[in-house]
Image (cartoon, rainbow, N blue to C red; front, side, top):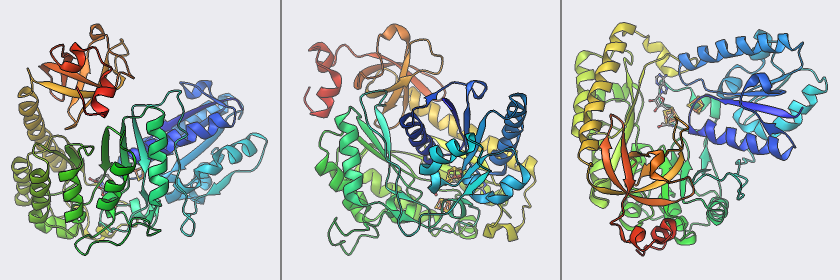
Length: 471
Ligand code: SAH
Ligand code: SF4
Ligand code: F3S
């Protein structure tokens, strides 16, 4: 087995997990390839958050079965992630052409089990959660291929019981990583050139320090997240940008708000899922916050950090959602307004509490509501982006653009996406660059190097200029 291919479905956790699997397989002497047809080992990292994701997986696995048959079985197929955990042995019973079924906490065993499968071992299932001794996959930082923006996991699993959500049963109970390990990983990433870190957790701001190393928790704090942010800022002063995802509205306690007030390293953007603008729906969703509390969290964040932008997740067509409930979602969108909305049609999931509420909103009505959400969200976004034309923005150059023509793109501190044309002459690795915004698209901006900016005029390296805070 020499060549591997990883297909990733699902959220940032899965992207992060897949990146770590990529490193593990490289460490085991294998090399990545761009298509399953070229690979000896194919890993599909799966998501089961909505039924659509699962059916997409089944059709992909059907194609991989054909590929494997055409190669007379000379290909190892691993199904990893949330569907693997959810289905377990049933996955093998239904799809005997799969070699290894691996839950999110068993990825470290992937090289060993895939190698065994290649040598003829029978199909295996490993889907236990590491509840007693949780381990966290850590990036193998190196000079090679390090991205300017890196994920760092601070907790895994989820103790909330949102009634629609399958994640607690795929990722397990919440477990938290020691603060020193988190800081250590960030320090290492920064020493190899990362400028931005995105802390990951399902309810990331509910972080509880498992070792007590962050000290006594102030009486107003609901979690140790504020203290963790302070610790990272103190111990990794060269970090240029710090983000986190996804926070739960009920954990924005005064220490997190204070961190946003004090710490320049924290970006002026928060992705805070709300799911619905209707209190009746929020109650049925068991979200444990209401509309007013959500808006209050945003008000406080914006008071602490003027100009802070907010993006969100929304579900339309949750059981019994009326036109009036839905109108309240639209009115919340106008009240905030959001810069970025990820909206989904409600999808009943196995084992979730909402199943007993039925699924009474017809698909056509869900589709209509979804379209209205997107329409409003695009109008808010466009208005916001058009207002930025002519301004200068500091943009972290993160990746080559999707066209692959030599252009690059990245984000502002407030999370607006900015593209630079190939003629702009910038490349990934240029760091945080001042860009003059010349055009607004529907979802993104186009910028050119701002030659009036002191960092550019003095021809300093942009990244150093920003990290040290000096022009
Ligand atoms: N832990 C994160 C997100 C988890 S899943 C959080 O709580 O914010 C990502 C998003 O998928 C959720 O925010 C929700 O909007 C959506 N989602 C989850 N379950 C869903 C379901 N059954 N149907 C439709 N959307 C769902
Ligand atoms: Fe799911 Fe709710 Fe946990 Fe998010 S907080 S993962 S939506 S149960
Ligand atoms: Fe999907 Fe699992 Fe993430 S269900 S959204 S990949 S936590």
